[in-house]
Length: 298
Image (cartoon, rainbow, N blue to C red; front, side, top):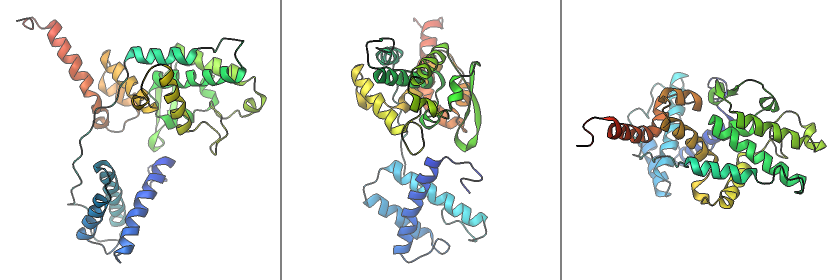
C-alpha cells in the first residue's frame, strides 16, 4: 500500500519494514496476533521500547508505524476497531535545525573548488573536486533532499532551462530553480567525467558510482562533505547534506522569501514541517520592528 498508493521511497519502505518487524516480533513473543491485540498489548510494546533506552523520537516513530498499520487493518476490514486511536505517544521537543551561515557556505564552496582548473593536479583529483562542487552548488541552489540530489539523471545537467523538474516523496513532482553557478558547476563536472571512458559510458546518472544503484550513495556524499568541512574549518558535527538543505531554506527566509514558497521548494506536503524555520522569521520580524518602528528607540 505504501509503495503503490503513496509512492513511498525505498528508504521509507525499508524504515517501515524494520519498525513493523520489531512490532510483529514483540506480538509473536507475547503470543497475540495483529488482529487480536489490544491497547494494553500496544502500551506494553511501547514500554519495552522505553526499557531498551531508545530515544523518544525513535519510540514516536515506532508508534507512528503501528498506528498506520492498524489503520490499514481497519480500513481493509481485517479488524473491526483500531486499538491505537486513544494511545498517546511520547512527548518530544522539536530541535531547531542546524544552520550554516552564508560565510560558511561560501567557505565550503571555495574549498571545494580548489584545484579544479589546475592542469598539474591528477585528473582523478580534479574530477572529485568538480563532483563535490557540483553537488554543493546544486544542493544549496535547490534545497533538494540528498536522495533526490544523488539520483539526478544526467539530463539534469544539460537542461537550458532555469528550473529543474524533480520527482520527490510520494512520487510528487516539483520545480526548483537553478542558479548560474550550479549550472556552470554541472557543466564542468560533465566535462571532466567525459575524460574517463568508463564513467562516460554510464550515461544515466549525473553522479555515477560503483554502487548497487549505479549512482553516488547518500553515505558517500555525507562522508566527502564532512572531510570538506574539516578542510574548510567547519566542525564535522555541524555539517551534513541535510544541514545544507536547512541553510537553503533559512537563507531564503532571511532574505524575505515567503514560507509557502519555501514549502513548495522543499517539497513539504504539510506547512507544519516547514514551520521549523519560523525561528528565522521571528528574528527577521524582531529586527524589522527594532529598525523600522517609530517608537522602537524609546
